[in-house]
Amino acid sequence: MGRLLITGAAGAIGTVLRRDLGPRWAHVRGLDRRAYDPVVAGEEVVVGDLRDEGHVAEAVSDVDAIVHLAGVPSESGFEEVMEHNILGTYRVLEAARKLGVRRVVIASTNHVVGFHPVGECLDDSSAPRPDTFYGVSKVAGEGLASLYADKFGLATVSVRIGTFRDRPTHRRHLWTWLSHRDAVHLFDRCLTAELEGHAIVYGVSANSRSWWSNPAGDALGYQPQDDAEVHLAAIEATDPWSVVDPAEPAEQRQGGPFVGWFTHAYGPR
Image (cartoon, rainbow, N blue to C red; front, top):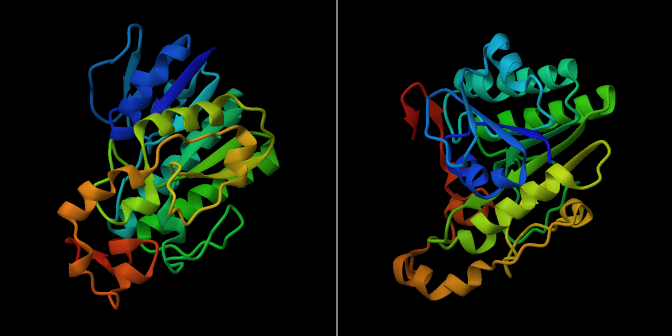
């Protein structure tokens, strides 16, 4: 394949994609705010800030597709998530429009629907109910991806990433886990499958208990292989059900502990 840009390339997901997806591309360029060591031969490293239009234009130049992962990865103050997640996503999409990149895959999050009750089955048409400022910023990112698809003809995918881990370690992960193997397969399908317009896909493995139906993922050919249920005994040993208070908001809503966080200048409380 052609030339791929991964923003947030030094992060957890970016590192796995560079290692396991990168070799399928002729050239991989990674953009991050800090320098990092390449994981595949020929990988290009670009150090820059998404808030800087010039840095983004340099990174987007001459690529065929983009995986946009960069941004604040969890709850933070409103101004910080606005600058890095909303403005940063706009910079990437606008550069893609100007420079003729037709496929952009954006990291969204399950926290755009975090205030839906546990047990409610959601799909790509479910209304956003964000559980944090972080979730709000990703709702905005999905909106931008949809706008650039409808107005400018880009093919865009918003991936509502669940709990990205090598293996699940918490009870909530039985519903939300996304394994490394399945993540690589999912992003590969998002980048290479036939697509017009904007799609919303849940980034989740084949968990028996999952809250999320994935028709857009099915349409892209995403076929996850891993199920968190295999790790049930290990999870119960470290995170026993006996200590659960069902009245806790974290137990009632799909966003888990995110629904109880309130963030101000000093961080989550």
